[in-house]
Image 1 (cartoon, rainbow, N blue to C red):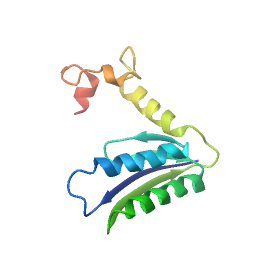
Image 2: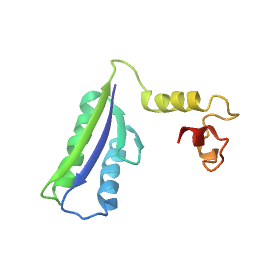
Image 3: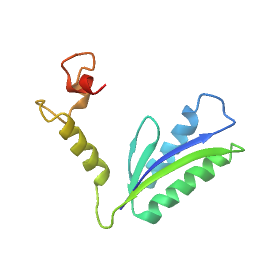
Length: 122
């Protein structure tokens, strides 16, 4: 299984790229592949060729409205392993918040609380 983080930035669109990000996420979502939106890119998980075809579709579609695209693709391939995207995040969060009552509920962590493990990491 392949996990890639994809970030696509049309260079002639100004500062607000929300429409282009939404278009990218829509293409990824329509693929049926497992994905997770992040602040600097979107991670996509699947078989190698399926993921690369989605990446190609994103670049092709965004390229229709832009003279130039700046993009990054960062990947991790492991043969035969599935559901790694979700498991990897859960394992790291579980390790960081192992001393809290509910380690997988990061949304409940108060970042303004000086005793919070998340605050101590900042």
